[in-house]
Image (cartoon, rainbow, N blue to C red; front, side):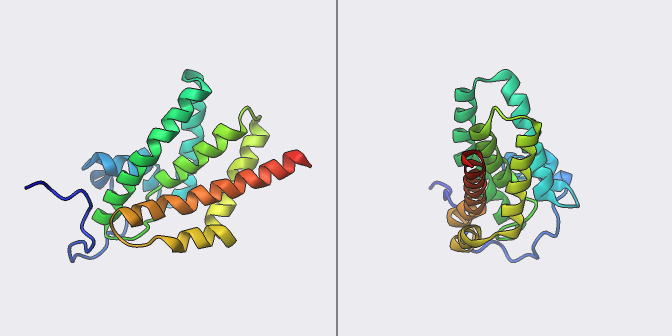
Length: 180
């Protein structure tokens, strides 16, 4: 008999984890990824810390990889992140923990990949717009945030989906700004 592919729909009856620890993050590769290699452990604004980590990581990738290769890294990061967010949220027993920041990482990498080359001001505008859409969740971002909830693969996708929509909204504003 093989182990099920999905985490249980009803996680064990334990209180939800208030905030993940370094020990929790290091206990499973999925936790390391979902918590943004430690950026999600920030006690203040973990989503912003994760987005900052994504920005720095993207700039590092730019030094080593061609834009096409970065695109492949992002494409591979989506299913890996979906798995990591699913596993970590289930083990934390929280539907969409704020400490899971891989969703911000993927979405902001997509934003940077599509707006680069941009100077520091352009990157900062992208960062601020993305954080605004992700934190305030206007219109389509709120819709995306409410669409997929629960434990298991559906909930893991929901963690990522609203940030992808926030990234799309960021790109729309930047495109309108450039067109104007």
